[in-house]
Length: 424
Image (cartoon, rainbow, N blue to C red; front, side, top):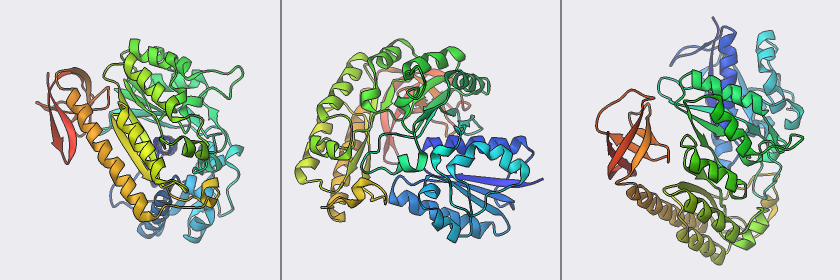
């Protein structure tokens, strides 16, 4: 029996794709290797969203080659698409994005990819991405969209993922139903530009239509959205979350900057006022809503005033937590050639200031939940996860996947992060 390992870095889309390809191998009789077991094939999904992610991807490729000298090491994902030569030089075989949808055929015929350069990411069919729950994982992942047409100045993903394309509604609903049958207590809907689901169809379809179809496809799992652009959080989606308890009251809306000048320079299709209007409308319609935001600091040309505009906007908004990223130059993007990079020290200081603000906002959001009742699903760690994404420490141990209503009696800290305390 042949054995394999799969490693994935980066986003939930990578995780979902990796799980799908692993499932195809298992269906063909391959066995996923345990710790320390020899393997015949190691498959790596790389990430290129930041310089750090690209470096970690290449380190992982070299580690797999070192740890499994007799195995075929096959590399795919965004960093492979961006810098294939780095992996060829590391002695890996490469699997371009265009070939991912043919993995079942490739592995069946043992026609493993050689070291030729990958084709354009637009050349292949939609790669499936489904991750079912497991012993330690109560949430399933369902990829319904891939690619991006936005071409923001700092982002290489449109070059590595290709054009925006969608999984048809009927196929998505069938996959959601299968996840429900497999015991998924929650399904996270994911994509590279999730809000553009359905825009490539004729006639165009909208994300809210997909959400209603998924919720109707199976009565059990609650549904959580991954990152969604603020201008694509429509009133229809907000209204659906207000009336459908299985649609989690948790949205992650990338901001990137609170400076109108920098947003325009980035190529973002909104201004600070537009973003603030969406956030406030969502919170007004959904009391207790959890709202996260991505923020980018240190973009070339970012001034002290630009940073202050960002900090002041975030302070003024009911944001629940922040993901803060220092700018990382990516070859092939417009920002890579922009002048006036802030110094690494300045970028580090700005990132630290916003992370401190994010920690304060997260603690305040958690403290505001005391006295409420949350719908909680027990995770493999033993902690509960509220529909609003808060972690809850329970008074008694319960099996993973258990769903229950919990009265929130307090807020504590666990490893410097807030955690709610609940009873049931």
